[in-house]
Image (cartoon, rainbow, N blue to C red; front, side):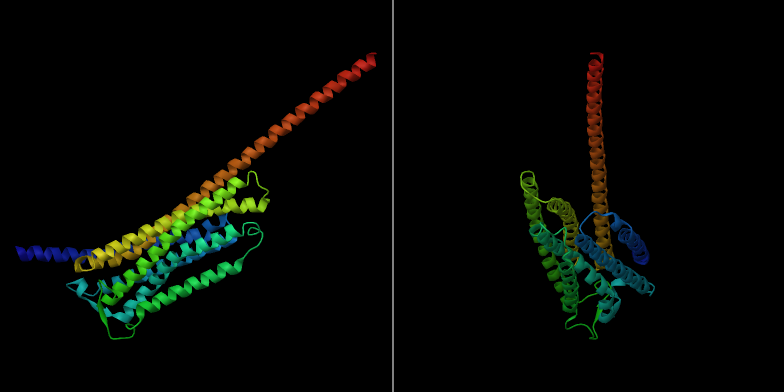
Length: 340
């Protein structure tokens, strides 16, 4: 009886092991569809400065890299699951293959985290140079930040591979990394989380400062471009706060789960499968937030335009009534003069 129960349990585990990657890959492909739709259609309707749009598109490219990395991981796991093994976690694979499979996901994840830092730097410059930032492009700042961001992702990838890549190491499929790399992952993840939290609070300070400038615009002598840039800074910083909140939440979830199951062989392969899915879902949430903010701003602009049109129509009616009344008075005076 116990043998039958054990065989049934093992059959159930193998069924889950075979079908879970397919289910998760379908989720990743759906997230890829949302990302592509946002990249080619959603970005056209966002009302922001060109530099802010470039940074959002760069974050979109990083999300696509996460999608590609997650698809590679799921496809590789489907390939490994086709090999008949009694215990999935006991299957050993070369570390070099493991590193290559995980590389796109690692670089994309790091770039998503450092995107919050680029948002902060760009908005800091836009706040300080608000007098002429709207007129000038300042493209060099954005290009330099993007290059530094991708170079940093490559350096972290090298940090993961130091002393391990190219050696005849073999790791379990449930880990896809060595014990030393697990600690490196936690160190890098915690450092990125601290960076994101610091940027979150600094962005809050920038929002307060721009709101203070907006209140001064009522009485101060500010040009039209300065007023527009300050309003745009507030709008983009609000969006950056929401994006930072989602990224921080996904980072905390990944760190907590990885720390909790680091010594549980039965759950490691499940987390290894769900890790790219969590990151893809978090970016889909970011896309939804951006689309919602853009929809809200478009409706607000349409409402403001309608109110402006109504006010213009009212003023035209008032002036038309005044002109008509003056003409009637003049006609009355003319008739009286003619009678006399």
